Image (tube, rainbow, N blue to C red; front, side, top):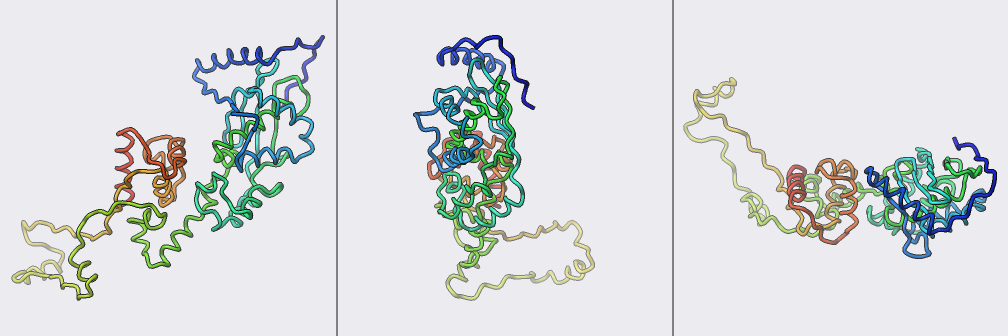
Length: 364
């Protein structure tokens, strides 16, 4: 619920933007000392958002007439650096905006209805090449129109948002709330995955990884081979060869010669057969373990790139959070790695060791 309107006996004294910033900075410094991670919105120029997701968010908010009177003041506030803190979580936005004093803004956003999400996934099935294309907004016109549709897309409708600000303005959307909404658009330029977090859906579900696996199997690659070295075959990443010589059986098959027969028993051991048949074994005889021939493990990718990490995680069918938990790091680190694309990743020896261990366990 919004707090009641404050009563003033006179107009408040005018405070310059510089004075507001100074007062807000003092308050934020106190919060930092208490361990609060302050996340200000800082624009590099006059433009608030420039990406498909960021600009799409701002355009969507401006398309509703109910917001028309308040949004212009919000643009002024975001451009002069008044949004001192902006934190996007699942279904919620928490912010601090510098005004006459430092105001606390909270925006609750309902999750995307399951029917809408299912329809979006059907419409995008097989039309988005990778997570990188999705987050960078490199989509064909049809997909763009689907995800940014005013009524059925990903962006929230006015009825799905609830605003709260502790300023004295009685309106549901005050200028501080408007500034925060523009701040979200700016934040989506750099972290587009936050939109999906805000709407309570997993953006990875829009990328049809199973289609890549199907194409690979149709071309003659077995699923067992995909499990062993599918990262290179399915996702198009160059990897070094293992360097292991082919087995005698594989060499014979490649040359078109019949495979050599394997010996099932040795001369003089016929007397052991009845005993084995009865479930017994020769006294003091060592137990022979059955060796199972497995497909050779895929080599660890060298150099290690963001695309290699993404392909590895996608082949396991894991979210960034699940994959990060497997290695013992944060999901934010996985997100930053994958954003590097084809760039080589630099990391600490301890993290690299953990990655190699996880690779051996998942590619055996």
